[in-house]
Length: 224
Image (cartoon, rainbow, N blue to C red; front, side, top):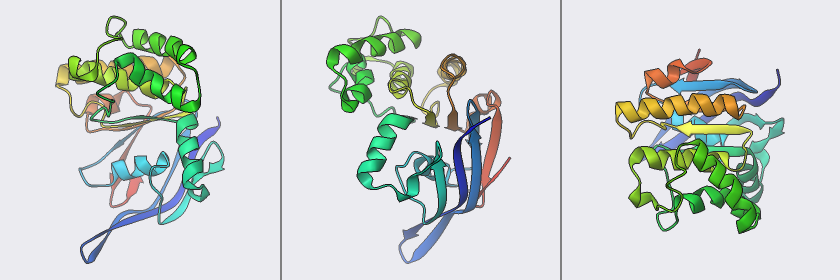
């Protein structure tokens, strides 16, 4: 089975006042194609930092991150932007939807940024919104949608560019248990249907339980 991500001996620290806080201390990880991996751990352990490094949103102090056999730590800012748009789908706890745009326009956005015409982007976006159960909500803005519906829009948006790697940071963390469980089930369905490779940071034990592998981040390294 081919590897989508290969992380080797990653170190990452941040300065806090006069102190240097070591977040990741020699972390290594492989993500196989088709895998659905969960990253768990206490708050502040570095889970989101790891996800941001994987997605090229931040850079490690040292170590190697290869995505689809491409070393992303050496890419320029412009190259990283292109890499993220073409290769990675992001889902965040707080959606980050654009409030002035409709659900449909939010899902179209990655395709429009890639250079697709409005007409070419609309079709796939409508299909994805239908897949996540929002076929009647295309023209609603985020403020007119519930928290669970907003997260479904965010999931559809993340899938719009057909990413090789899907990264989700606490996708159920801002939802009530019932809605969170529904989103977890949706993740499982979409992962299989779209043959995704996913890494999910979560405190939700039920969501972690449906993943093919579960890691715990402790003292800057991963424990399987």
